Image 1: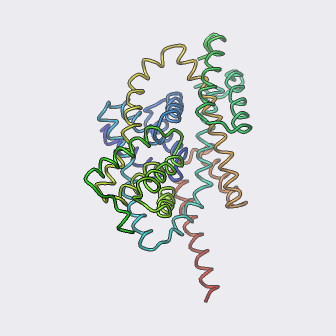
Image 2: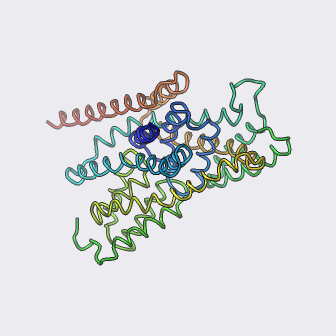
Image 3: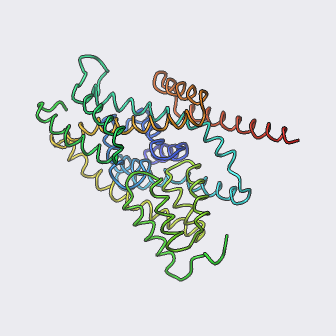
Length: 189
Length: 196
């Protein structure tokens, strides 16, 4: 049952992505790429790129995108609804507790314990994407090493650390520069 | 909650919807930006919420699972206009990305086979990897500052578990959540004992 699978997958993504923003990326990868094979790693990376460059949170963008590709507009509606449903329940519960007891110590303490894990999971998803950019879809090997992809990554990383520009500009820049170089190099895609 | 800050007029639902819709449509780059825009609109302009209350709502939005932008909209909607407000604020926040991404996903397959688009997307892979690496460096510095050596050890352990041993992400989150809960309990408990 496709809709049911979409529902359970995106409900889990909505329920367990603590920390906002990139925190949802490893969960989406596990559900959508590793678990159900709805997207390839390459399509998933495109999705993260698109999500970063368009309005809306990554989790919401991903659910709409995957739902749409798997089961059209009904699929997009089911996936997007499933992704925000847990938040509606939990946020109202927490708000009620907070305004009753004026105390978030346990919740914030739990989050402090979670934060290292969330960072590690984001890093792990980042390594998969880096490996795709540098080695392509196959197994990482010296023969598959893509100098252009690695060089672009290093340049983009230095620019981000040094000048702290808007990430959208860096992605657009690496797309334009990298795209031109890849085309010149004879389509290493 | 002060009653005088309650929104009035029959167009309040429409105002809530349009405000969340425009804020969501023009916000690129994450939930923290949206929280400050919501504060500007609902606390500073409309006076539906106190600025202090907005800070509390932001703390809850960041402490809850899910996207911070959606959580903040849920809270603002619920605090100002109850359950209907919550539904309206969520709809306003969801509609812009839903429409944009649906359109993109319709064109995606056709575009992806175009050699120029494929080359640009291939170039962008390196850019996204760099953005994630940059985020990771910033966040791990925060972890080190906030939780010290233990935080760094948990971080390394969780990374190895996920990347080398392919442990399910949910298990890693569950174990660390329990750790956070227990250590908070111990901390609060110890403090109470000292006070007695």
